[in-house]
Every structure is written in C-alpha cells, then in structure tokens.
Image (tube, rainbow, N blue to C red; front, side, top):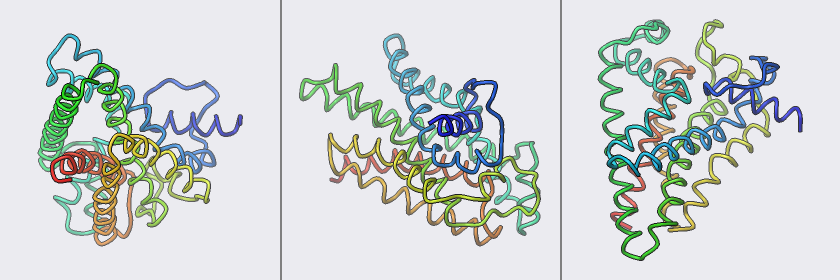
Length: 272
C-alpha cells in the first residue's frame, strides 16, 4: 500500500501542480508505474473543474462559470496538456521531416499554428460544455430532479471526460514507441517500461466514470468509440511522421479526445 501511494503521488506530482509530500521525486521506476494512475488524475482535475463550475454558477452565468471551470483545470495541471497540444500544432504544422518536427516541438516558444489551435480548441470546448450543461438542465427541469441529479450528472460528465481522454492518451504508450532518441523530454521515463498492472489500472480508472455516467442513459457509453477512433488516427499520424510519440503528442491526444468526448455526448443525445 505504501508503495502504491508513492506511485500515486508520483503521478500527482508529475501531471499536476498539486503539492505532494517532500519524499516524492521523479524516480524513473515510480514514473514508469505512474501511468496506471494517469486516468485517476483525471478524476481529480475533473472534480476541481466541476466544483469551480458548480459554485460559480450560483453567482455568475453558465458561460462565466464554464470559463472559470476551464481556468481551474488549466491551473491544476499547469497547462501541461494544453502546452503539448500547442507544440504538436506548431511541430506538425511547420515541420516536414521527423527532425524538424521534433525540433519545433522542443522549442518553448509558441507559434502561429499553436496559438490558432489553442484558440479553436478552447472555443470548441467552451461551446460544447455550454450545450451539454444546458441540455442536462432542461432534462432535469422536465422530470423534476434538477436539484440533485443535475449536480451528479455534471460531475460525472467532467470526470468521465478527463479520465477517458487521459486513458486514450496513455494507451499510446502501451502500443507505440517513444520517438525521441535523447533524454530531453520529461516524458521519457514513462515511455520505457510498463506491465499488465499499468494497463489494467489505466483502463479501470479511465472507464469507471463513464460506466457510472451510463447509469443515467446506457447509450452514453458509446462515446468511448469516437474517442478511441480519434486516438487511433492520431497515433497513426504520429507514427507516420515521427515514428512514434512524444510527451507533447500524449498531451495533444488528451486535449483532442476530451473535446471529442463532449461532442460525442451531444451527438448521442441528439440522435439516439
């Protein structure tokens, strides 16, 4: 149990800005095992985003509350995944060889592709959340359960999105090779070794929130299909151009799959 707590805190320290015990460091052995808790970190980030939204909604409009929830999520992770998304936009947008793409992604400066990508990503995420929350509010009022079920569904929506998208991202580690040949990336340690414990742990924590959300409507579990289809094509695209993945690729996958999850739920509610 003590070792598992150490591994969990290693994941928490690596993927978020949440303070951890002073004894926790970036030990390669624990970082290798930390991938099993990556989707669990999504539970924490999703919960923080929900709490921020929920209490902000008592004072402000839905739109402002959603923006504040997005800011809270970014602050908790230190824009870890958003930065990866921007780097991938710059790298694959401006590079035409593996070496050039990796060089651009390594640059800390943000370029036009990254800036444009982030603006469009945030706009799509914001609009998707507004529509999802509005739909849940309408259904809740219609059946008279808004006060209790409304909060639970929104919480599960946030948590499932963050957990499933992180599962999609970390699953690339299990199926593809790390692209960089040097040790310049912070994500190198988690790309070296994994066992069945990491795979089972990641899928357990990644799917549980969606399974619980599906209690309200079983069709919602179908959202896992477009998320992993997106993950498949992203991984194949990375493989084609750079022969594998980098930490930035994982961050970009998380961000894209999170938005795809929101869009999938909207589509399910509309057509099923």
